[in-house]
Image (cartoon, rainbow, N blue to C red; front, side):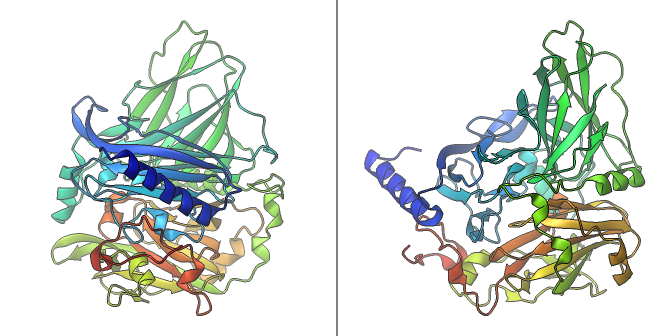
Length: 544
């Protein structure tokens, strides 16, 4: 896309003005320019239409430091609208930048939009992905890493290398074909394989030097399957989960559920040869497996034989591992004070929200729901409608805060919650599949999970001392998971299934976090460069 030099200069000045107004001149900022386009990819040996960012599949990593301002100018060279969301980036007081359709207008074909993000008080490993039209099945995803500021202590030595590893199940069909299946009201078939950094079996290799320790940032960017990650002959030490430094527990393999991110340290302490990296599906009757190579720099021996096996359908194994993942209370987080200085277990909850998933048919088409409501996108993003006070787009309270037991129905579901409330959310899974849920704008404490039905007596087994704080949690089949969350981030925030077909067909809703004493103006204003759509078209954002 070409623009005159004067227009380019004007755009830069507008962006700089907005950055200074929103983020403050004292915080560093970094500029990125991305071109999103289609391109041929062959991850499983057949040609597919992929979504590339600056010609790359997967897209480029974002490297940042706590409190950095990320100014990402995205040009949409596709033939359809496009949005990018930032899994785990909290966008404090700024849900407009969240990049899901409930908050942000899509980028039209041939146009661009500049995201203005600040990784305020965050560290850790996350990723970005395309949130519209089942684009996630075509690529457009990449890693995000947020390093601690130089004077903030980190509870491990600097690794010799730091690798992003994006794993996920994959189809041989184009995303348009998968979307068409869902739009016809049918379920998707089983995936065709698993990718590691966009490549099939043995398509990716990581080179290490004997005796040195490396950090691997592993994210499951797939569409539906939990995956197990392991490296032949090596142990992994978990050090960070979605922005929280963890107790440094050692594992031979690690379950990574959809949408989740983990950081592990691994030491090249074995004989100098090549070893399998193995990723396999969990809780599936047919086990999908793919491999990469953990290559010692002084190796003369290639991988051979069968890759090491891992857990397959064992739920208890995974549940016990999940319970072992705990916060390192003495380590610093994004600030110098210890992570354990926030005593979440001593705070009284002000509200309990119980959320139960369901699947069924509506008007002859497959739908998924939370508390019986299958989400239907409105003609205008909810955040935009709220900001401009456009009536009739959504209704606060259109989803109950507890299961209703009724049949599935369609609505634009929004649940109102009080700003600065401290709430308990219980995810109840009465289905026979594993679920995974993500809450935009927040991290939360995973205080408990177990099989069977949740009751108030279940609170007796909560971990109220060192539960891990994260933004995506699994719920095992016929089980429940409970979280505590401090609603300290005003805005409109998406709570969704990370099983992407279920999300697409309704298993999501929005939390509207406000109080009567908190106005929409307490958020950052919608910037002057905002794209406005639906019933907000033609309106103007207020001056900064």
